[in-house]
Length: 294
Image (cartoon, rainbow, N blue to C red):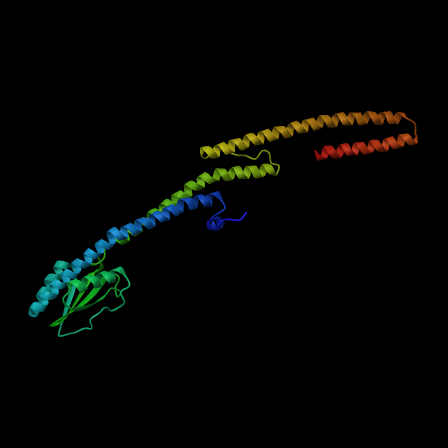
């Protein structure tokens, strides 16, 4: 039968899926779990982290613009302004009078933090600037060119990026790992009784009619095990009945053959007697072969 085009991917998926019950059950649990975590991460990024990052970058740009204007309007009071700002905003400031800088970023903007800083600084800051988010993992550096010199600002990364992101991602990963471990444990507990039934069936097929099997597990698994034990008992009873029947047949046939031999012994030593004895030997051999096969 020719398969339709939309049926082919399902066949490919079947080849990739695990063949065992444990593996397939694990895939059924793991795939929705991973998809759910990705969905939560996407929602968190769109609704929380991105918005919080924009607000933090906006506040940082406003603070930097305010400090820059104060120093630009009163360069002789730069030390006092820097001291007050450092205490108020928990940042480090350094003003180099007469210095200049090349405007622009020190590295390509390839992260959300870079884009947020560039967007907010460009909107809120009235002076040329450049920033650095890579030199240190725990801080961001911004240099602002004022009419009287260059103001350097080093602020903790928490001023421009939400620390709850890493906490949320860590908790999400930990909860996923914990859920996966628990799923593996409980699935294994459900699969072990099935494996026990399979081993008992395999040993029974090899002739071990007394292989132990403990009925345990879920209701369906217990029912399978109980039905297997019932089937094994029935087969064993049928085998015993057949053995007893064949033993009775064997006794009757042997008795008949023995009587025929005794009657032949009473006959004289003739060619007919020897021929009948050979036929009787052949009959006895056939009976033995049949009983051995049965």
